[in-house]
Every structure is written in C-alpha cells, then in structure tokens.
Length: 337
Ligand code: UDP
Image 1 (spheres, helix red, strand yellow):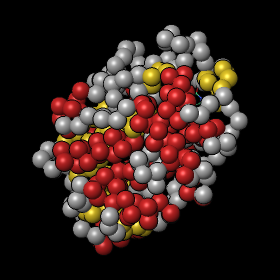
Image 2: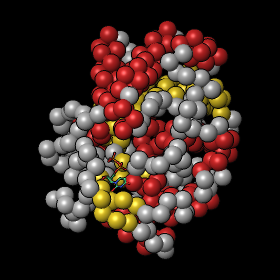
Image 3: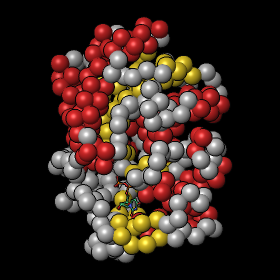
Image 4: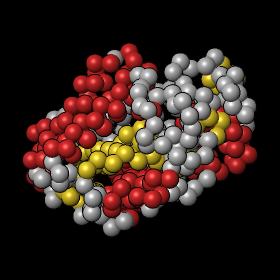
C-alpha cells in the first residue's frame, strides 16, 4: 500500500519513512521543509531502496494536499507535520494553534473526501503534563504546560471526535516519550535549527565542537542524582512502532492512544556519562537552574503497545548514544555538511 507521511522529511518522519519502505510499502511525503532539508529525501530513498514521491507543500494548503491524494492511491496517513518548539509556542501561541490545528483539520477533511480511513498521529507524552505518578499509562490524567502540548492534546481530541462520527475511521495516537539516536547507518539523524532545545542534540553538538558546554537544568530534583529523569527511546524503535500501528489499523477502527517508550527512566547525567563512555568523548557540563515547566521524572508504562501493537523497544541507551554520535560525526553540520 501507499502511505502518506506529512512532515516526513523531519527527524522522526524520515526514520519512519525508511521503516515503512522496509515493511514493503510505498511512501509519499508532504513537507514544507520549514524545519527539514530536501537532502533527506534521497537519503531515505537510499536506505529504503526505492523511490519516494516528495511534495514540498504546506499541509494547511487544502488544494495542494488534495492534489497529492488525487495523484496517489493513498491507503493510510502518518501525520507528523507541525511546529514543535515549546518555547516558541509560549511566545507565539496563536501561530501554534493556527498551524498545528489547521494541519490536523485540513488533513482529516481531505482524507474524508478521498475515503482514506487509516491515520497514525504523532502525539507526545507532553499531553500528560507533570505526572503525579510514574510509570505513566494511557489513562493517566492529561493536561499541558504550554501551547505546543495543547495542540497535541487538542489534535487528539479532534481525531477522537472524527472517529465518533465516522465508524470506519481508525486512528492511533502515538504518545512519544523522548526520541533520540539516529539510523545506525549514520545517513539520517536529528538536525535541529539553531540552538538545540533538547538534551541529546545538544550533547551531540558539544561532542562535535559546535557548542562549548552542556547546561544541566537542575540537580536538585528528587531523583537518584538530582537531575531530571526521562524515558529515552531510540528513533528507529519509535519508527517501527509506527509500522506496528499501521498494521493495527488494518483490522480495527476507532481512536486508540498508545505510549511509545521503553518503560525505563534515565537521568540527564546518566545520558552524559553513557555518551562519554560509549563514544570516548568528554562532555563538559555545568549545573544551571531548573527549566520552567520540567517534570522531575517521567517514564512510560509501555505495556499497551506490546499487548495491542505487538511492539516493544529493542535498542538500549548505549545504542542510542553510539548511533547519535555516528550520525553527528559523519554530518557535523547536519544536512548542511
Ligand atoms: N535538559 C538539560 N539541558 C539541556 C536540555 C535538556 O539538562 O540543554 C534536560 C531537561 O531538563 C530534561 C531532560 O534534559 O530533564 C530532557 O529534556 P528534553 O528537552 O530533551 O526533553 P523533554 O522531556 O523536556 O521534552
């Protein structure tokens, strides 16, 4: 079958495109390249072993999106397209709601017009806000700390409502924990614009000499070493979770929320130490104040994915650190290298 990936040129989208192709499907990508490089398309083709149909369009452009559905026999969609910088969303909330919700609604309208009834959504553990207890399962209370998170929360709700109205529609809401790492080939990986907001790309840029030192946001959390604990998941495991979710939509309908995590928590300093050990590189760091809105500890109850999607993460933290560095050292300036 042919699968449309909106935002398929981005970090998670590109890795997912490769895994979908390796599962035997055709891939069509719609991406406006606002936060991605066109170079990634040929790299996806190389890793996936066949042609990718690429359209440089904004998913909010209904006529353009409709044109893609008219040209290709699309059976399912994986929806990644959206803005994702937490700080920027606080500064420009209306732009975030306009863009991310418009993308979701436009996509659902065009899917409905073309009778496409299988959708995987790139949601996030951010919908759990600061959890009261861990591990977090899919029924944990939800509520967000920033407009970016609310756009994920609201998009989930819009998709649930669409499923209520259309009993043929199948949607899997994948709530990602902390995706890191890169394809083991070192050919595709994470390439953030400007100063990285997230931990692992920041460490990778320190390692390659683009940044002097990592700032560790707080060492007084109630955790084993005082630094924040997260559930880091290898991006290729995450990508394979999308293939499992696509398979699930073949014989099911309705909306299903599923965590994609490993079920294990690591602290910021665990990540730094493992990166240093596995790659033989020192990562200078200094302790900084806590970052507003950060939880002390969050990690997944990942059992539902195993039960319903027959998926579980296979790669460990050493794999994640090794593959991150393999990508970064081969591409010191990302896709601009
Ligand atoms: N973090 C840090 N320094 C950085 C970026 C992140 O100490 O430059 C910490 C952050 O406080 C959190 C963890 O690393 O405890 C993961 O942060 P990230 O932004 O990667 O993901 P989040 O879980 O916040 O979405």
